[in-house]
Length: 95
Image 1 (cartoon, rainbow, N blue to C red):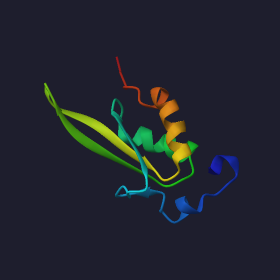
Image 2: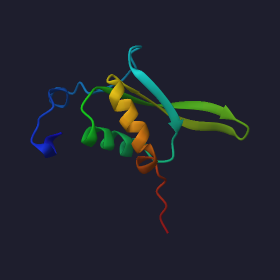
Image 3: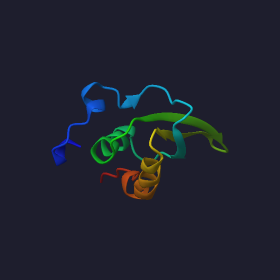
C-alpha cells in the first residue's frame, strides 16, 4: 500500500498475483460483471497478501456464462473482498 507510505515486498518482486491457485488459498466464485483489471486494481490498492484471479466458464441454459474465481492466501482478505464486492463488480455502462 504505497499510498500509505508502505512498500509491499511482494509487489516489488512480482510475487503477489499468482498464475495458479494453490490449494491452501481460500477461494470464492462470483458472477463477473466488470473486467478483471478493475478487480485486480482494487486488490492491489486495498489488500496486501498474495492472490489469484481467473475466469471460470460455466454452462447455463443460454450457453456459456463467465464467472470469476478468486483466491486469497489470507482468509481475512476474502471476507473484506466479499463485503466490498458490490461496489467493485459493477458493469460499465456508457451512453
